[in-house]
Image 1 (cartoon, rainbow, N blue to C red):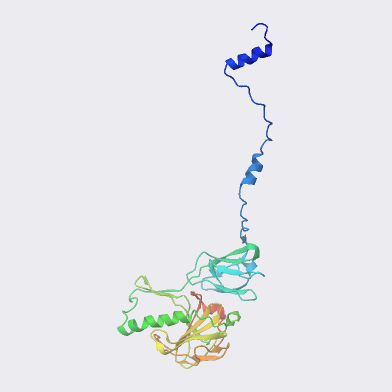
Image 2 (cartoon, rainbow, N blue to C red):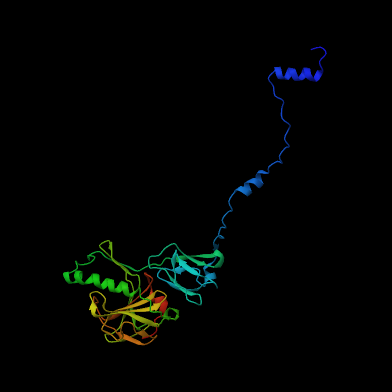
Length: 310
């Protein structure tokens, strides 16, 4: 190779070795920011609603606690769109007023939730205060005699009528009023009392018994709409009258000797609705006054206050 230029010699050597010259070097790409790349590629996160705001029951106009069989009026915050008690919707008046109650056997706490605009919610827990119910033990008496054929035949239809009457919304405002006693007299049977027959519990007393003579006038404890007027008498309740006071609150009057109002009639507080009697299963003349709120049995005595002198 003597006499050949050095460039020719190098080119020949590369060709003999089977090598190909490397291409020109490409310009370097800009470094990638992993944070920016992840943000650009990930879908947008959904907007989560704000967490519930825990508040005192007083914020909703409720007492700090509610006794078993008790009822309370509250006021929802302005703008509340929905109110629930333990997840179940509660009727809410246009002015924000509402009613809640604790069943005779309620325990623990009741949870009241108010839904506000922009997905905000206020939640209050209302402790239920237990009560000492009067128990009467009858160790020598059987629980209940075997029902006769007539009772067995008639009772299912009666129970259906009672259940249906308690679901009627008569659009009454009586639930807002301070209730009065429908009849005055001696309380012969308190709400919640229960008998134990030979160690077996019987049904508790679902109302208040007021002992008065047959024919004593019974008046409406608050405004209401008549949803049931059972005449002829029912097997247990006798002549039974049910009033809807609105907001899910009802009153029932048992054992009447006479009913003076008709189904669908609007009655005002203090107006006559019937007479005390002993129809149905009653040992003597008295008025049995029972109240319910959306299926919960409540005590009429604290609702009406102290019994006035007869």
